View 1 (cartoon, one colour):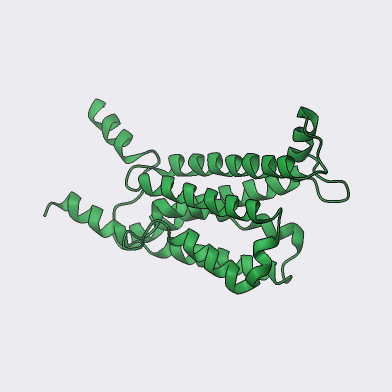
View 2: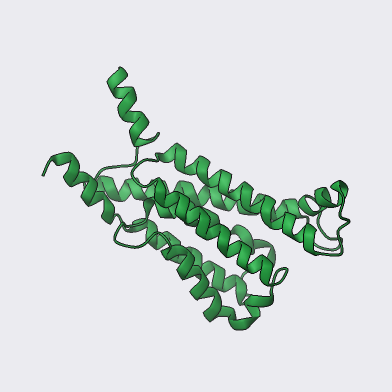
Length: 214
C-alpha cells in the first residue's frame, strides 16, 4: 500500500470533531429544558455540524449519523412536544429534512473539500435553511399577508412582540460559521498530532491541480 493511500485510510479515523458535535447536542438539550436563555438557543451550530460534520465525520460512521442523533436527542429531551413546536409538523419535518440534505451533500465532499470549501458550504446551508424555514412560516401562518411585503416581513422583522427574525438568522449564521471553523481546526489539529493527512485550505483536487500547474 502506498504512503498516500495509507494516509487517506488513516484520515478516516479523525474523531475529535465528533466531540464538538456531542457538545452541540448537549447545548441543545439545555436550551430545550429552559436552562439556556431562549435568545441563545439558536447559537447551537446545527447546520454546521450537519454539513461540515459530514465532511469531517469518521468514515466508519454513516453520513446520516448527525441527523439521527439530532432526532433521537430531540425525542428523548422533549418527547411528543417537539412534534408540535415551531410551526407544526411541516416545520419539524422540513427542518430535519434540511439537516439530512446538508449532511448528504457534505458526505459527497469527503476527501474533496478544503477548509474554505467547508466554511463556504456551511454558509450556503445556513442561508438556505433561513430562507426555506421562514418562507414556510410565511406560507402557513395567517399572521403574514400572502404578499411580497408579507414575505419580507417573515424574513426580517417577524411577528410583533417577538425578537426579529433577522436576529435569529444572525445568531444561527454566527454559530454555524464558528462551528464549521471549529470543526476544520480541530480536524487538522488531531491530524497533525497523529500525523495524518490534514485538510488543505482549498479542496484536495484543486490543490493537486495547482501544484501540477506550478
